[in-house]
Length: 348
Image 1 (cartoon, one colour):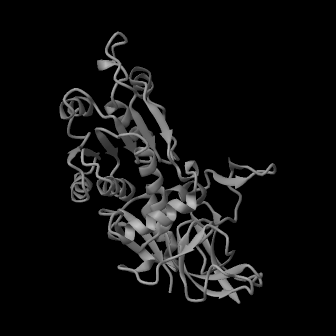
Image 2 (image 1 turned 180 degrees about the horizontal axis):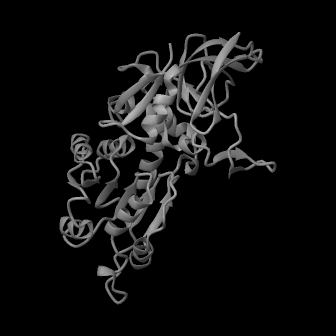
Image 3 (image 1 turned 30 degrees about the vertical axis):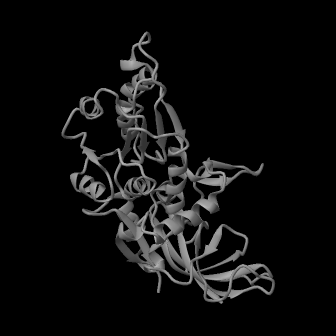
């Protein structure tokens, strides 16, 4: 059987290649791809800047891109064949999870890979319930609630930021302030549970945060912008460890900044950010999925929260394209059109 793969053969250049699939092993399944989410973390490889690979010593590291290569790690598909010893899946099962190089029509993979079956009955189109970004959100929520989050801000209200807000509300956290440069996104943030909003383009963000929190600033800030400027904003509004930043002031505890951004742009590290890190001394945690104790468990919980309406990813997918128009989807990632939130690639 043959499958078609989208291979990056040069920066920003896809070529569709037809290849013979390998024979199924006893513990392998054949997945027909139904949809794959578009993710900004694939851009460095697509543009030829850098990629992640396994080193000769067995660990993952950032390395130069070698063409041809592939991207896509947010799959949803259907099992259409299985090996003789497969016990976890049946033919016809709809599956999702975290698999690499998924921009292809079919994929052969071991049944013990990071995939799982959807429930038989779904309240939405299963193709729009993509596990990988939902698992990312669960990891952020787990970290945010390891201690009482207190006054909470979410910087960046794309689909991940909106999902964080929705998830926090589902966990009973109501004192949430959304921060974004786009007023339309801030309106969406209110719809998904933010109690207050701030637009740094329309106010002095430090003063506004000071006034909004009655001089306390925020105990927990989640940064999901993809830009060092977003991290700078987070540091401007996080609380001081000592009252008003005075070393002889009352100690009130360190604030927490949770960042999940892939800072893939060529940005200068602002001096103001360096000063705020020194003055406010927050704990800064990287909450990428690799920090999770059990990544697959987070993905499963994320899908269950989506089904329950607590993480409504399916409502945040604003743009779809066909597999054969994959370059259009990556154009959206680089230059978001008006109203873009989350993109999805659909297969026949």
